[in-house]
Amino acid sequence: MYQQAAEFIASKLHSKPQIGLVLGTGLNSLADAIEDAVVIPFSEIPHFPVSTVHQGNLVAGRLNGKAVLCMQGRIHFYEGYSMQQLGLPIQVMRVLGVKTVILTNASGGICESYFPGEIVMLSDHIKLAPESPLCGKNPEALGERFFDMTTAYDQELRNLAKEAAEELGLPLPEGVYAYMGGPQFETPAEIRALRVLGADLVGMSTVPEVIAARHCNVKVLAFSCVTNMAAGMKQGGLDKAVIQDAERRGQNDMLKLLTKVVEKL
Image (cartoon, one colour):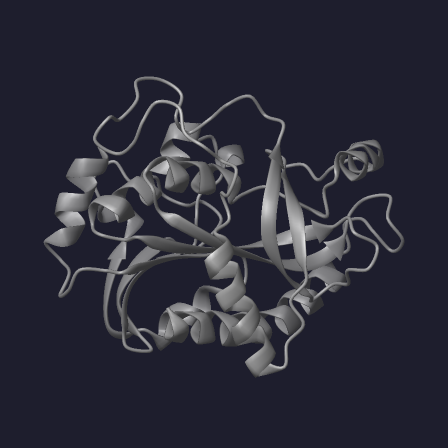
């Protein structure tokens, strides 16, 4: 399926992409900065899962002189897709030539020093759900059955991102992201448990994509915009006004950071 999807996309592209981008909640506008853009709706791509919560386009072109392939929106487990389907877009990117992928998301803050609107770079993750995007027959053409996740979030890319943030005058703390399937938000007890386990952030995406990327030897850099403090935290829980305000404030910083990082790659 990933091969057929890649062949269809390749027939539409002007150049071979170098960098993959996955835009999470509130970040679709970055795709507007891509020059010579080719826009392919997810619904037109063979076997490609279609987002029910995001815009759902694949945008190819150039960003700061680099050939990029950008997912304008993503899919989630809670939409009813299998873990294997969540990994398919990353596998497609790899077949098309992508060696580095930059992932973004929105999250709840568990670390007490975080605040809504802050950008955090992921250094590691915790995934308690047993499912994996690599369950079933291993796609041998992409990677080995068993693979290492020790350095899932590439250190050289993280160093580069820190340099970019310093040049922009942006703070960029690092944190551990806990993956929860959703769509319900977490309970206070779940957040207390995640704190004990060492999580700084919690969200409903990204980790399946990271697993798929590392399986096929694609380097990963990931950023999260803290949109609210998690349930049970001080001023935590679901507050739509707080989330919307944080998304607006974090969006500008995230877009500047992503553009700068792509320039440096």
